[in-house]
Length: 283
DNA sequence: CATTTCACCTGGTGGC
DNA sequence: TGCCACCAGGTGAAAT
Image 1: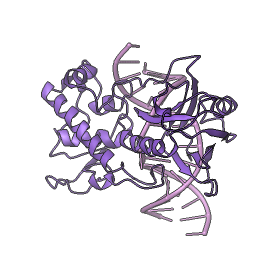
Image 2: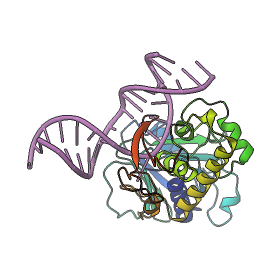
Image 3: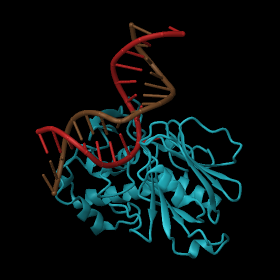
C-alpha cells in the first residue's frame, strides 16, 4: 500500500499515540517471511524498551527505542535511541494502534503490548513487509540508501539521474537514487511535469529534470496533507483512509479523459509496473 | 557495473 | 456458484 505520503502519515499517527510508551510484551506470528531479524530476537530486543519517537525514512518506519531502564514521559524524545525497530510495509502492510480488545485482523504478524494498555499491531496479508530490530550498541542505525525526495535540491537531483539510460519512470522507482517514490507518485509526478514515463533519463533536459523535481515535491506534499492515497485498503494508524486518490490525474484512470486536455489516459508496462500517462500532455 | 525480469504472497474483481 | 486469468501501493535475487 504505502509510498512516502502514506508512510509519513502512518509514522506521524503512530508517533503521536505511542511516543513515551513502554513495550511490555512482544508477540510475533509463526510465519518466517516478515522478519528480517528472527522473531525471538526481536521480541527479546523490544520488551521493556521505551518508544522515544517514530519517524519515516524513505518507505521505512523507524521507531527509536530507549534502554529498558529509561522512564517514560515528555523528555523521552530528546534521548538518543539505543535501539531501533524498523518496519517496512511492503504492498499490504499496516501498522495500527489499537486497544487489546480490538478484533485481531487476519494476517496479524506482530502485537506489541504497551504499558498504557494500547497495542501496536503489524498486519500484512501478502507478507511483503519486513520487520527488523537493530541494537545501536552493536551496529549502525538505519539509513535509507537514496536521497529524500522532499529535501533534494536542484543540483543533487540532477546529479542523481545523470548518465542513467533507463526509462525515467524506472529511475524514479529506484530506491537507491530517491527513497520513498512508488508507482502512484512516479506516475502522478511525471504527468504534472509533462514527461512521458518511457523517456530515457539521460535524454531529459535540465529544465525537464527541474520540473520533475518540483512536481514530485508538490505532489508528495499535497498527498501528505490529504493523508495519502487509499487505492483499495490503505488506512493510517487509526484505521482512517486517505483522500489523495481523489486528486489522481493518471494513476488507475486508464481510458478516462485527461483532466487537462480530455485525451484518454493510456496504460502501458514500464519497469514491469502498470504505468499511466496522458499521450497529449506528456512528451 | 547497469539494467531487466521474475518470484515472492494473498485477495479482489470480472469474464465465462 | 465455480473456476480462471489478471491485477494490486514493493523489493531483492537471478539473469542478461
